[in-house]
Image (cartoon, rainbow, N blue to C red):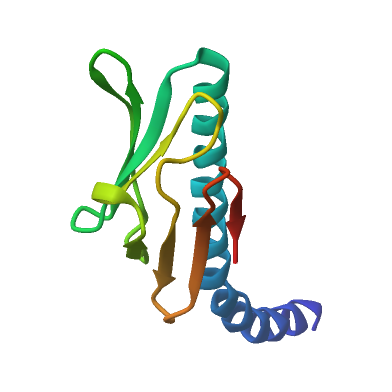
Amino acid sequence: MVIGILMIMGAVIWPIANSFQPSLKLSAVARDLTVNLRSVQQKAVTEQVEYGLRFSLDANSYQVLKFGTTTQEILNKALPVDVWLDQVSGFTNQEVIFNILGAVETAGTVVLKNTRQQSKTIEVRPSGFIKIQ
């Protein structure tokens, strides 16, 4: 009897839990991207060298870059298949570059979407302020 009740509850709860998964994954990817942006900003300030992120919509990925005497790739991050870079606007050459004061050369936004057409927008302001909308 108890096992039957648990099976019925599981059958009801499973689809509900799965319906939240795309939204949770989108939020997680947006937070991860924001953490990488803030980390790069801190590195630029502490090391007194420009750092940045370069977005690739075709590859659905971004690279963390260090701009010294040469450009060095620190990290190449591919996004999950069910979350993608929908739009990158405002930035020159689809790059967010933080100067040694933590500000950006050009401000802009990054829009992420999931399979349910939900979106998260990450805004980078000229001062270097980063916000998830």
